[in-house]
Amino acid sequence: MTAVQRMCAEHKDEILQFASDLVKIRAETGAEQDAAIAVKAKMEELGFDRILTTKLGDIVGVMGNGPTKILFDSHMDAVVVNDADEWEFPPFGGVMDDTYIHGRGSVDMRCSIACTVYAAYFAKQLGYTDGKTVYVSASVMEEDFDAYAIRKEIEELQLDLDYAVICEPSNDQIALGHRGRAMFEIVTHGISCHGSAPENGKNAVYEMRKVIERVEALNDEFYKIEGEHGSVVLSKIECEAVSLNAVPASCRIYLDRRLAKGETFEVVKKEMDKLVEGLDAQWNVYIAKGTSYTGQPVDMYTFMEAWETDVNDPLPQALAKSYRENLEKEPVFFKWNFSTNGFATTEKGIPTIGLGPGEMQYCHMRDERVKKESLLNCCKAYTGLIANI
Image 1 (spheres, helix red, strand yellow):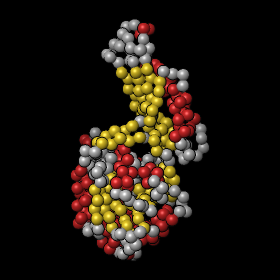
Image 2: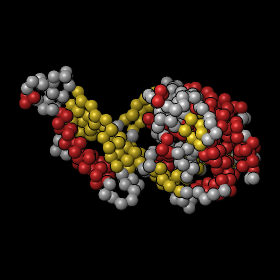
Image 3: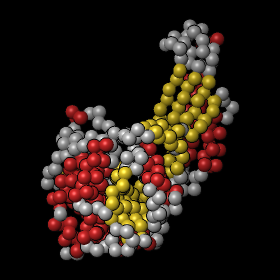
């Protein structure tokens, strides 16, 4: 056994129990305070050198004080549960059986928090933090505001990072990047009148129908592109009318636009202009608003470009070496199809990769669950990465 394998084996039950305890905590976006308390308490128990808290409520544990600085980020918030009666196990039960930890947030991504907290602890015990500073970030509000909190965390704490690892679920594969994400609003305008005489007005919903047809056609064009490509989907529609017997005076749709590498704002701006061309309509980038559990306002401009790290760069190669040493198999490299906090780290020029426990298909799904083996494997890989970097 390697030293990393031995350490993980000795603390196996502790790691799994911590992950299970975190899954038991209901912590939706903007309400992560109980999870934050639990994470901070575990870091204190394990003797982290420093524990930092941001204005938004992120918890950042620090091990070491060397010149090489690496961040591991997992978010504390999980999506809501509206169908608890239909789950095989209680969504906040943290139930463990022989194979899995069950519950909301197990994949996305409480088990990652447990992995990274213990990986930093193991690295310190094994002497791997000499010459290094390891930051373990348990960040807030990622589900609705991906990249916002971690960007603010890096700025507020003045983290001069050399590397970042995003610990989203990856089927135990190493993620080298993912598509970009943008959200847009389009509004069409009409003239309200009584529903008994629609000819006296102008229906904003009918005007929007023309936009919707163009959106659908645009997405069809994306899927004619070979290889990586963007996509666009209408995700929500609203209209305003003074009553149920009145012609709507305005209609609003929201578009979820996923961006391939190289699709800049200027590229997408031309698409959006064409969607509203010749119509009584306008578009804008959606500004997502919210409030953190600490009471801080969140105001996020939702346009984030795609990113990708070269497989031959030092960071993925160091993780691949750890993978081979401690998991005793060859790593597989891929790119996530969904978005993560990696937007913020790559935006700041920090070399970034991803690895996290769990099968991606269980994100946001009923009966969410993580294999214990996957959780322990990632803990080993993270610890070895700290040694290798």
